Image (cartoon, rainbow, N blue to C red; front, side):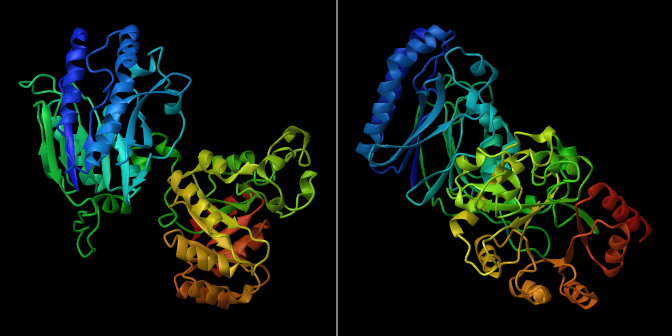
Length: 535
């Protein structure tokens, strides 16, 4: 692949806008059919410093349509993918947007700058509302390549780099300005981004005058951190050839196989040391100690089961784990409910026979108590949004019966939600359906699996070994000491469902049970803590 970066001139004098814009267009005219990828800087429709809203709107009015049409024409003429940054009218205001044009000159996707500056947020003409809600990184797939994006201020948020790295990107497009940083600083930032994400970074900026040592620094950087092309403060074009699928894998510590830098880092990540709200983050499942207490369906002794209040109460009291059940609705939404039927919420039929909108019409709290009247059915995403990484989630994936095939599309949606909220190290799937366990191993082998009783509770250990599961969930009275010992001999942890009796809990712990599921979290968790201290 041959990539081209364009670095046009920029002026602090608004009266030079026309001159700067015409030079920008002339640089685009220099592109040719040898190029596969062409990247322009941020704010191509505001080619000089606009100090007022009137100037900005005037510039956008004059240049926005022209630059977008020129980008489309350049893409067609050169048969190249072209990335250009200009304003997009959302209907609620203007958004700082990177447009991706395919080789036919069609808009293949858009990226909205995720970190508008304080100045941008305060611009009366701007729409920045989207920047204040959770979203996944924008990933655009074209020609078998995965593109990610950063725009100017986005480059400074290093804590977002791991999330980009997990997208398995091939190229990161940077339409930028960063007019106050030195060339050295811009090199450090861009090289680290490429190295950390194992991705080629193609960054375009503007020249602040050819003798300037700040701004500019349009560059192409390889995953090794090597700079393949660098314009410093020159006005013009620069190109580099590279294979976007060629990655860099380094020794990941003594005796370990080579890995990408971000993979090496993730192995030992301790986010509670530095992330905002880090004190709420618990150890991942693989590090959390045993024995544990798992709050079954949340702390539903004080709030409706499978509800945010029930989960929140358990987590606030320090629950090692929470357990909940998920079902797909008729229209493919993922909701949390224990029973297949809706009898307990004044509904009829089964949850999977209704659309999500139909379920929203039902009251999921009134049968528990007047204080919870009007509570709506809870989605899996709502649970993740509120509690991701604050506890371990024992996710009971429900099926119509224990022999049915599971819908792979639904499973992939569940997996995507887990990764969306960076919760893959804090969850495990539990199911008694061997078909689901087999499919989950195939679709997401990195997410732990726990075998439930299903149609063969006495064969749980053998089934766990067969499907590569690291846990079993014993169901009383269908287990004995021999099963526990055999599971432990194969490195398999043992949950038990369930115990609300302190004496019974102690007897289970003495047998070697690793996790106690309970409906009475407060009382049983104290018993587990006392047993742990004594032993």
